[in-house]
Length: 360
Image (cartoon, rainbow, N blue to C red):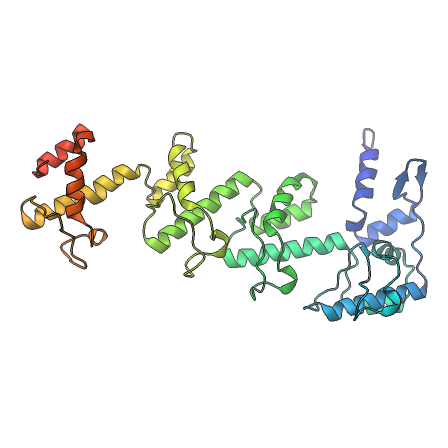
């Protein structure tokens, strides 16, 4: 045991008192473990004594709280609870000082509460351990999110939606994105059991990797919806239409795509490979020229055997002679624009136009 940093161990125990299992608390209490240290030195925590009347007051508060909430899975009270001075809260409790619920919970650990009170509170699923309760809620929320989206790539600003029947009412409004952010920041402080539970769910500890996977999922969704990933710079994921998962609503996907193109030389190879497999367009202007403008000109010549394209010519809709992506294209207007702007074209592009026989 030489070299054991006992002081750090004791400090950690004091900071995690509400999350320790009851049997460990009992062992430490039996040893006379000191939970509080003040400026005058070390002293034992005062005994958590509650008269029967005080215990009954808390029981009444829990009963009212249960009647007011929209679920019966549990009843949670914060460490200090001030009874509202209005109905249906008991009139005789309106003016009392805030209830020390934390001390009341410690009294339960010490075994100083009336058994009938404890039994009544247990029947209402009163939360005795706040930290364990919060952990359970977090895990439940992560499980529901994964069931909906098949992953745990949760945006940092994701909040469980209100009035969503897919989520329990007691999770509505939960800032799940911040929960994930905080879990990553506290990874080293989590118990091995908790880290293992998160790993088993597929939790991504690397925030940058998680953000990349989330953005890639948005690009894949775009392709599923539109059949390509030729995304305009101003594109923002819509909340209407039912095509997009809610976690992407409002995402400026076009801006993100533009940033990818600007960072192409610094992107990791695996990210570039994933984008290439998706059909990502790195140079949209070249793609527009080769796969739309030039293709339309070549198709016109193949069909009509000349390049005298009228100003008002529009590619016929639903015409099987034309590629579907060109239907309704204003080809005559395109040719007029080319004839005006061709002086700024590179030699390779001018050569393509001359070979087609387009008069500039």
